[in-house]
Image (tube, rainbow, N blue to C red; front, top):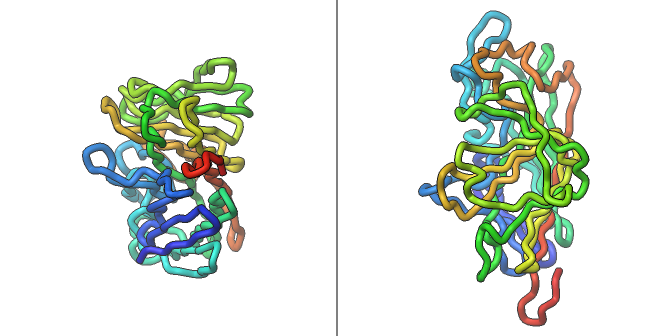
Length: 300
């Protein structure tokens, strides 16, 4: 099932499988990557209950070993519709026999997509419905078309971090595992990272200290977008390595992959949220999109 909502010139589409965004369009301009198996077939997976990879593909919890796919199982599960209004839709995943086979916790994960005039607000709500402490991470993995406008190319665009004050690159291995170390990452004029495909010759770049907001823009077009992620301490950027892929994933994460060489004990894994019985946790992010209206040149 695909759900469509619209407000003013902004519209989105979301599917029930994975509660995944399929489209973010404003004034006739599609901002979301539309998937292509040549590069990356997905569009905007939801990452739960882990972010990234587990070393060895599994973890232990109280003496039992569980296998779980990279970035978790939520992206493969079918969410049920909880609420649908003109400007919002809420999709819900409850723990079930399939999830408990790899993740022995009782939970309810709900994701609300809400539109304002030019912003998509996303509220991700996790509830512990079990007696044991609920352990989880959460992340977003939206891909965006780059270039955004005709007559521009990937290298015309930059990422601007207006609130970054102490940006550090997390040092991952070339297989995507954390080393537990960081390196200061200088930006042009303290704010700007110019895009080039070679940034991803190894894989992704993940940052800490990015300030909770980033803007994708170019001096050659009025098309731009900003991702606001106040509740997420880490930000990743990625496209298919060693390609000329015409997209960029901008990924707010509250969680990290395994430390290289270490099988995770879930109760000791960091960073993870720990929710007591009946507690809830909500994480918020938003996507703001700007697209010129071509007929009169105005920008909205």
